[in-house]
Length: 160
Image (cartoon, rainbow, N blue to C red; front, side, top):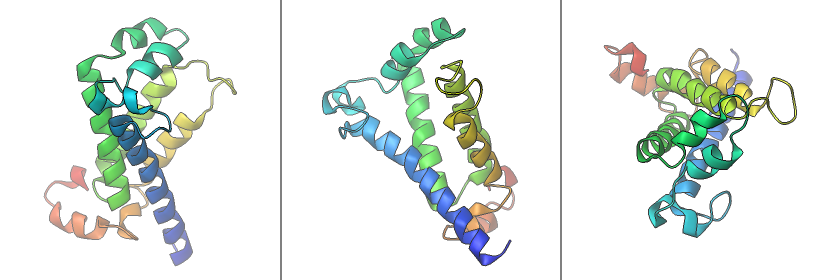
């Protein structure tokens, strides 16, 4: 890949990382975008109650609504947002992010079947595909710590 391609992939990685990191920060502190301050996780709110409790629809609505507000689900969801955000922003652990990220996105997609504006495709599927692609392109090596990380984790390739 040429330099322009590497830079564009790095910008894509960092931008997507910020999407996940911002979602984590907003839900943690209630920064007033998607999460009001009184609904923040630190204020006793649940980061999953709104989406799973009220936005879920379709054939799996009962399952997703039963998970809404569950402490274990909240912790796993927030850990996923933080882990994906940091991995993508730093350019490390992209192999794990390339598996865990698409899994999270597909689970969120399944919560809202069928998608509101298209019979199949929505941003969750696009994000899942991009997340799966980034490790294949060694996206963390440009403007990230990916090359350094690969050297440190050579014995554990799944961590790269």
